[in-house]
Amino acid sequence: MKNHLSDRINSMSTSATLAMAAKARELKSEGKDIIGLSLGEPDFNIPDFIKEAAKEAVDQNYSSYSPVDGYADLKQAIANKFNRDNGLTYGLNQIVVSTGAKQSLANIAMVMLNDGDEVILPAPYWVSYSDIVKLAQGVPVEVPTSIDTDFKMTPEQLEKAITPKTKMMWFSSPCNPSGSVYSKEELEGLAKVLRKYPNIFVVSDEIYEHINFRGGHVSIANIEGMYDRTITVNGVSKAFAMTGWRIGYIGGPEWIAKACTKFQGQITSGANAIAQRATIAALDAPISSIKFMIDEFHKRRDLVLELLGEIKGFNLNVPEGAFYVFPDISSFFGKTINGTLINNASDFALYLLEKANVATVTGEAFGNDNCIRISYAASEKELREAIARIKAVL
Picture 1 (cartoon, rainbow, N blue to C red):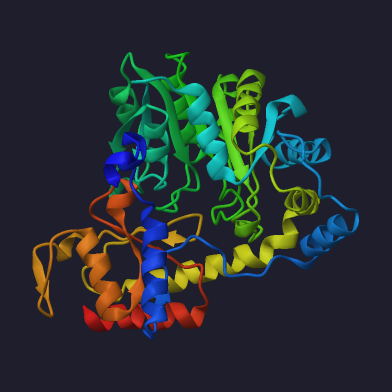
Picture 2 (picture 1 turned 60 degrees about the vertical axis):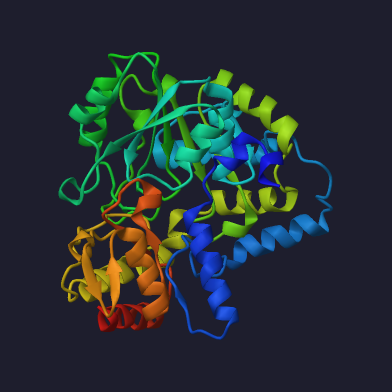
């Protein structure tokens, strides 16, 4: 039957994070006590004021098709948020609301990339970037980084990766999977290189902007010369614990926003009406309304670093945002643990799942073969138990 499927789907990878989550659910259904640290999903409930806005929208009969690019008052709330949090001014015609930030990224790839266009991806990168680029017939160009540089690409590396075929650069800050956060100075260094190449566009994935422990988020669109060539991607899944509501959005040049609207109109049309109304309440609220979640993630990060630091062979940096740690575990490669030979990060993650009943994700899926991703979007009790199990089987 595979021969009847398109080359496009046959060549596409399965999302490693979703695959591991599915495997964990399968083992749970068999009665195994699995602790899932693979998915990037906050374990908090949605704040009540957002729920109330959704209920009100139901009562107000928001049940018809929504505008393809989003309700005007939601786009105004997004414009206000960009101005308040990022110092960016976007008109409503520069904003497109989509079914999650993942669709926002797919829209951009499909309207911007032609066959053979190269997209620079500082590695590690979010698991879906590479396949989204390939789906649009682009060519992912990985720029490897390491734990020694906090998994951040340097201007010298960027310059070296640019070729006549380079069309875009995609990155996230705070980064999934590493939790790294680019400072203003670091972004200015990258922008200095990019200003020499006016035809290269930037996708800045800022979905984790509020889960930031260093204080103050910087958008690359705010750096001199970058506004007109940056598409800023964001959404409400992470900071507002609204993963299942599927609302993402972009701010960028009007001609790109119009193209994304045109493409989306043929694929999904407008995003869920009720979720859009709830998102207005989320974005209009002060950041202080979700500070309790950010503080808790900060506390968990410190706990996880402390506990993992007690395990010999885990090389750790200090992530400054998001809710992941990305330890280098390459010291285990080539070793046999309790009869299991560990050749790579995938072997290591599978070993932890089968022997410790803890689900993590191999770093290979994120473009880094030496690491695994551990999500600390779980309770303190679960984190303590999970790391105790990992320690025991190593």
